[in-house]
Image (tube, rainbow, N blue to C red; front, side, top):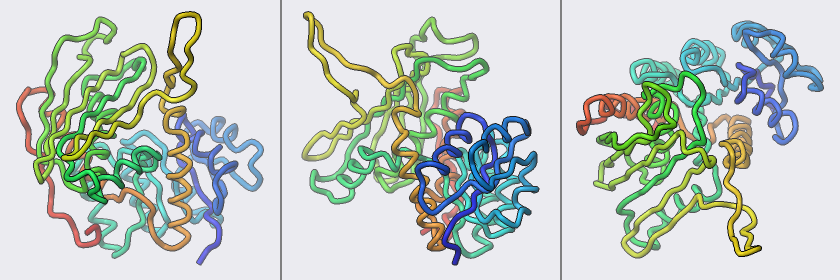
Length: 337
C-alpha cells in the first residue's frame, strides 16, 4: 500500500487553490502531484513553489500521469461526472467537492458505478461534518444524553451573492449543506421539503427571492427548518439550534473576542465560509488522506451525494410550487449500509 497520496487537484479556482495550499502546507501523508485547469496559466501559477508538481490542461492527462494516485475534484459541478468515472476506472481515492453531480439521476449513475467496483472510493466534500461544533452536536444526538432529538433550526446567511446567483441556487448551492447536516445529525433520510417565500429584501438581484424558509421532515418525524438569507450584508453566519427532550443545544454562534468598551459591546462576524470553516476543511482533507492510505474513505459517501441531490430536486420543485414535495430516493445499496 502506498505511504503517500500523490494528488491531482482538478480545478484551480477559488476552492481548488485553497485545497492546493492546504495539501502542500498543512496536510500530512499527501503531496500535490498535478494541478489541472482549462486556464493553464492559472494551473501553472497554482503550483509555484511546489516541488515535483506539474500543471496540466486536462483531467485525463492528469489521471494518466504515472505519478498520480489520488484525485481531488474542485471543478464546477457539471464537470464532475466524467472525471468521477475516469477516476473510478483508475481505482483512485477521490475527494469530490459538493455536489457529487448536479442532479439525482447522474448522481445515481455514479453510485451504481462505484457499487459495481465493490468498494468505496468517493468521499464527498460536505466539510461541515468535520467542524468541531457540528461534531459535538452529532455526538450529543448519538449518545442520547439529552433524550431524543425533536427539532432542528438552521440559519444560513451570506453577506451577498455573486452575479448570476439564481433563485434555484439558494437551494442547490446553499441549502444543500443543511440537507446534509440534517441527515448527519439525525442519521436519517429527509422525506419531504417545503419552501415558503415571504417578504423579500430589496438587496436581492432581479429574479432572486431572498430570504426563503425551507421546512423539512425526516423518516422518524424530526422537523427541521432553514432560514436561507444570501444577501444579509452583515457577514457570513451559519448556526443551528437543536431541541431535545431534555435540553436545547446551539452551535455556530459568533466567535472571537467579545468586547465591551465606551458604552458599547460586540464582536466580529466572519466575512466568508473560508474563515468560518477553514479548520473543518483541514480536518476533512486530513481524514480523507488518512483513510485513503488505509484503503477506506473518511467522510460522506457517494450515497450522501446522491441523497442530497434528491433533496435539492425536491427543494427546487417545492420552491416553484409552494407545496410539500416528497424526496424520491432509490433503494440504498448494501455497499453504503
